[in-house]
Amino acid sequence: MRHDWSRLNHMQIGRYAEYFAKMHLVLLGLDVYSAEVDDRGIDFVVRQEPDRYWDVQVKSVRKLNYVFMRKEVFRPRHNLLLALVLFEEEREPDLYLIPASRWETPDGLFVDRDYDGKASKPEYGLNLSRKRLPELDPFRFDHAGASIFGPSAPA
Image (tube, rainbow, N blue to C red; front, top):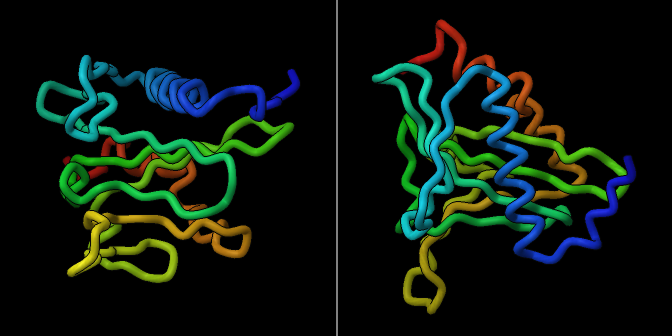
């Protein structure tokens, strides 16, 4: 199958990313519930057991640049995840699951911006680049899914 992501507009690529992430989580045996209205920065909820659930925000990226989440809807907590879907031409998308708590210790890749006294609203972000991409390897879906949803994962 040819992966020609340039044919999809912004809305289409975002919707594809959301379904791509959902289907990967369903394959892990998790229940996935979609939000009818995305006004709180939550695209869907994942439930593993009656008392284990995670809110998930999905971000799709076609180019390695900066991606952000507004702090007013994305606050670091143990049950909030970012599902980052990276689209590169001629390739299957790469999926990363990043716990929101990772932004509690910002560095060059994971950033925390308040923009005090400026027009922009406070945000958490990722400075994506080819050089920094290996730093995301621990969050690749195959590894992160097992550590987040595995039997010994924290609830």
